[in-house]
Length: 523
Ligand code: ZN
Image (cartoon, protein in one colour):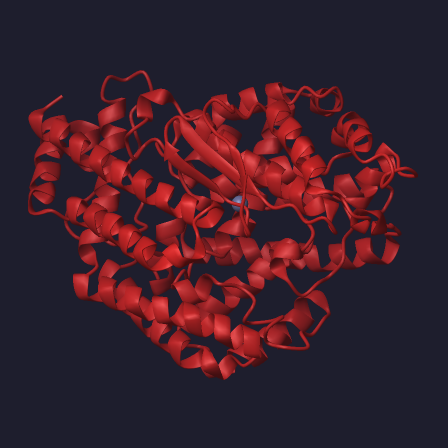
């Protein structure tokens, strides 16, 4: 390894340490920090993030990168163009895993991508975005509480304008939205997402109709009052069965469940216990457990480096949703796990059996709120947001017309019209944080997940039987071998092709849903 390369690795390591420190401060803020501590905590986190940004954009970094690339020669030098090329451009392929240049090529490609992104955004824009979104979040909370979009509108207008400026600074291959998407889903283009979502929408809308017309299921038992202690006991048991390692992680409570990486051997998950809704903690925990297994399964050789994290939000979400839905909402899963749950809650679940429970967790119903949506309608909520934010960024829709556009589209896609903006356009925090380009990754996760699962079933044809016997570890091993261990080495499109032999294909998700609901005798 050359001196320049070693220096870059050292810089990368310090950035990761700062990010993990910042994540620890955030984890504490969400799980146990006293309310009055918020002001200094915000300063602490901002300081850590500022230091990480400074480290990345330091004067020597560009030169070191250039030097390391030319010393690496071959693939390492060609992988990322240093001439201000647009983001989202195709990366050159990596050498094979057993090639001695593999690690340095993967590292330089990823680090170069991060560096080139960060240096293109002027410091003034970074600060202005941070200040604008900080105020916008407070305005969004107030607008949602008052059910008054006009309180949020000027903030969102400013965010859209600054975000467009950011996209222009970053550059893009086809349209400004590419540059935004690239932050969350490197390697994907807007046009590709548009195409995939158009297919998905055409397939999903009639499927929702067929299922909801035919499905008769009573899930009212979920509200019978379930003390938190029992929910916690069951959550811990399921995480253990999934192979989540409590020597390298822990489960805590927070208002919104999340997973955070505080180090290669410190991957924490949270959940929430609602006594009046049994499903909230169960599926929240399994979902976060899926995120956790991804991070825990990364090759330890990548620990302390930017290669040592999940490669994209879409791939991350594919792992959490596979555990939550494809595994956690399957009948075999409940054939094995229901007796445990019933032992913990004998009175509440007295007249329920495994099969009835398995049916109830698959109730499909068009609803207003994304985070409460079922597995089938969920992606439609995401497509709606993607189409609207794309129209905002392309200047085809004005912020003032957003509530009307939202409601019209809800009616088209799901057949329901929000009675208020609080339950419509104001429901999600993302836009107030400036996270435009984030939403598509939720639905991409469903698609990647089904496509990977389809591939896994070819390797493990008896996967249902394994799930029914409580053998979740063989699934975890397959995921680790094919997906987790690679960390951020491959982009999502590369990984999908590598694992499944084809590009992203929404057909697998639709096939999975059709198979599942015909097995449940709904279709
Ligand atoms: Zn998630």
